[in-house]
Image 1 (spheres, rainbow, N blue to C red):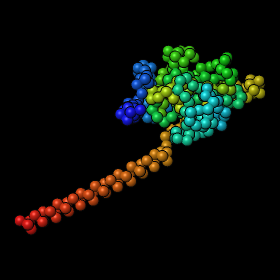
Image 2 (tube, rainbow, N blue to C red):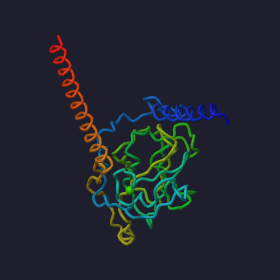
Image 3 (cartoon, rainbow, N blue to C red):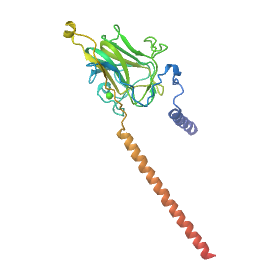
Image 4 (cartoon, rainbow, N blue to C red):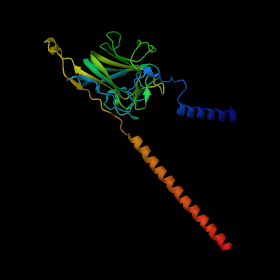
Length: 279
Ligand SMILES: [Ca+2]
């Protein structure tokens, strides 16, 4: 290959890289119009879901997670139920482009009152978010859909009327009306920034089913309480390191400029002195 061709290819590759980094890839579809968008701001936590007293137990911690992709692009599926909601390089899972799902096995049938998803800290709008509950691990029958914002059925799971939402540092809670099931499945099909599917944590709240109490007919209305859905944006060590670097490098540059200016001023003074002596 000629040297010119080689240089052209390298510069084209670098230019495309810079363009994609700055502008985003042109083939990523833009966000849908406002009527499809939940206006809730991403700058504050979502309001907590109200659930009956005793139904706010975290059921999903440490539960087994499976996925449409056995070996995720980045991370381990176990990260999704490890209790770490803060997004950092070591805490998130990245699934390949296209429609992907993750599935939590609660171990046995539970009564579910809330599900909360933390995708990644970056501000993305995820496509075709569908959240389902079932007792069938294959989601063939007895499937209850909790949330579906696939407005044109592009993922083939049925048309959904729910709105898109901006996913950021705060988990997105979904209220569930005492749906019973052992498995929770969450779908997505890329996002507005790239084609990948990110997950940092998914939590399922509710209560175990007391079969004995049910047989004795002891059920009834329970007072409402709040699920635990705190905010989770924290500064990571990487960000602290970056800040320290910026401050140190900035300090060095400022000091160098100061000494350079002082040196130049000294030179000018010396020249002026020499000139006046000569004159
Ligand atoms: Ca996690």
